[in-house]
Amino acid sequence: MPQLEQVEFFISQLFWLGVFFVILFTVLTYITLPKIRAFLNQRDDFVKSHISKQDELIKKAESIVENYEAKLTEAKNQASQIINDAKDKALKESEDLIKATEEKIQHEIKQTEERVAKEKDTAISELNDQLKDSATNFLSKVTNIEKGNINL
Amino acid sequence: MAKGESPLKQFEIQPIVDINFLGFDISFTNSALWMTITTAFILIFFTVPFLKAKKTNSVSDLYPTRMQVAAELGFNFINSLLADTVGKEGKKYFPLVFTLFMFILFGNLFGMIPYSFTFTSHIIVTLALAMGVFIFVTVLGFVKHGVKFFSFFVIPGLPVYMLPLLIPIEIISYLSRPISLSVRLFANMLAGHTLLKVFAGFVSALGFFGILPLVFIIALTGLEILIAFLQAYVFAILTCLYINDALHLH
Image 1 (spheres, chains in turn red, yellow):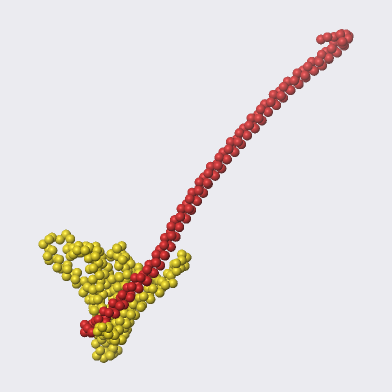
Image 2 (image 1 turned 180 degrees about the vertical axis):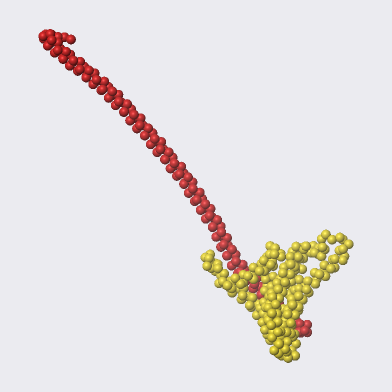
């Protein structure tokens, strides 16, 4: 077996193993591995920073939504307030109008009644005068007394 | 494979450039060549995709390219492996586990290329890696806990009269860690590659019926690629567990 027979090459193998292992170890330790680690860390940092940025943006968006909702409820409240006010006002106005109209109608009824009564009186008194005239005429004709002398 | 060639010939070390340093033979061999290729490949594979990475915050620059995704996959794999076994304190040992895993993984995988050489199939290499881990973990335990580290060999909640029996067993099991760690990797690589070569020999020997071992080799190659990954994973996860033991004792 050459592994155990070629004893003369043991030192050579050990020497070159040592040389290459040390070269490999040194270069990997001081150049290659730090480079790879830096690259991986850079990427991790990038991802992490983006995740934190994303969290910030989500918080911001949430606050915007909250703000929006608060404003929306406020506007809704205001709107219903306005509607209620308008309803009340309209109701009052219509009631006032009805009341005023009723008063006006009452007033007119009263006036009309007064006028009717007055006309009735004048008609009656006219009738009385006419009756008096005709009665006077009749009497003067019957009695031959001057009209002016008859006093009923 | 030429006739009469041993299936173990693939493990032979062939010097490419003879180097002698202070009387030591440190020739650049085929093993060293594949270590070079593995090291270069890992460094290119994991470094180049991130060279152009700019410091910007626009989304399009943060989309990983295909190569970056592939490199990240390996990075995150070892990261989660350490986090699952050791926890938060394991981050310090990430480069060590990462280097071990990638070095063994690509050493194993490049060994699957025909005519290449698998340096992890040599016991001296795997033993060196395992001893390195063992020494590192032991020193780490002493640094973290001082003399209290020896309490690691005393299983809590055990009757006192059992201790003389169990403490030696614990010590032996601790000392055999580097051996089991190295032999596991070495033997898996050795067995897999030898088996492939033995069946490859049958292909030419059986003539027309050589198609049967050929089909078997194709399936076995898939299994060997799985084992290449699995053994690197086992080596890495055991290293993590040993680090965890050294940090937390029991």
